Image: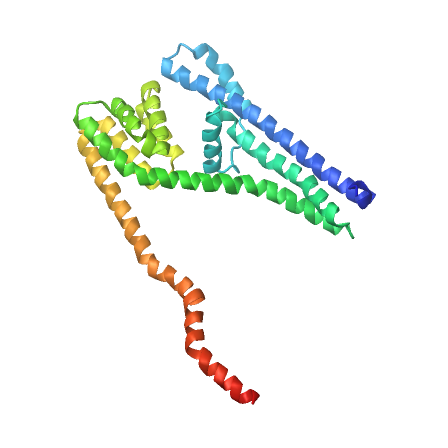
Length: 313
């Protein structure tokens, strides 16, 4: 059974119009990504010009012009999902600047691919009786392709953030030991990354990036802000704020880290107590669904059988 004879001309035109519309949308998002990359290059030139103190002043005006022409809104793209995609693309040598465009292109492309697949499957097992059926399938395919990558990346991002949050107190205690032994912050982070690679690989990866940023970037607080941006949880923000305050005012680093590690341990203990307090409430659901029916059957079953025996006789 072929697919085309099952549709009339209106259905074919409708499906072709949807596919063409989404293809044009995908091309527009790719063009948006190219312009965004050019915008980021222009901003980097501006930042380098301000850091180098005038040596790039002659090139600053073209950069400002490019930034003013190619500034596009970045709203509508979930940050956590794009950061998760950028982290996974980094393993294959793809720069992070392409992550927003690839994310939107993935959602659109998956929707375009799912529509003909779903139509082919439905046509294989039965014909379409009206125009509404292929329209519903087109909407479901596009919706599934649009939301499926978001759900998967959001789940992976939440799992990764929780794992990093659980491992952070251990990392802080290790960092206290190496700092008290006389190592600087960057060298101490490099040292604990080696110890955390097997037990806590996700946190080790983030700390390795943070150590590299501390060595390369002209502003050390910018490296800590990048770490807090990648792992957007209150515990990481507290750690980065404490470290930034320590580097800014020259307070003892080991003492500040000890206070932060104690707070993180207390927060982890509070979360465990909260989960333990929720257990009795959660256990009532399987008890009501599985245990109470069996108890009712054991208690009332014989009496019910006797009553039915009397009524039937």
